[in-house]
Image 1 (cartoon, rainbow, N blue to C red):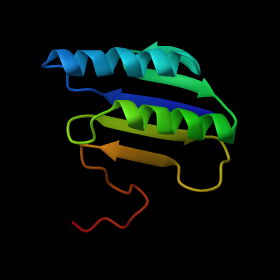
Image 2: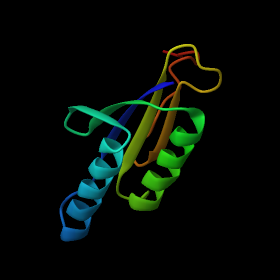
Image 3: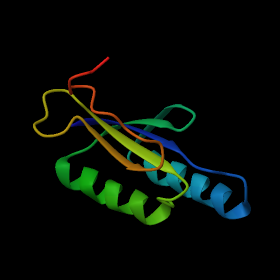
Image 4: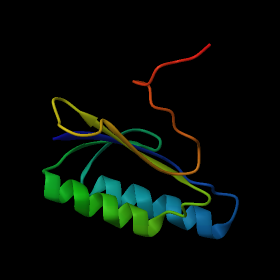
Length: 96
């Protein structure tokens, strides 16, 4: 499966900069960087879950944001979001 991983790590302190380096290093082990804080990964479901759990162990859910975009004809959710930065369901009805 193809997965696009994006993240936004709060780097105002040393701990945040350390998390940023750790997340980038872990993502690089599974795919290629295409932009700052954006990685394309080709993984099987087991590898994807391992990566997801590893990244969740690194980030601070109160300070950081992590998103997985599942590309292709995958069953299940197309986007998983963890942490800050509110997320909206783009498939839901919009009331204006």
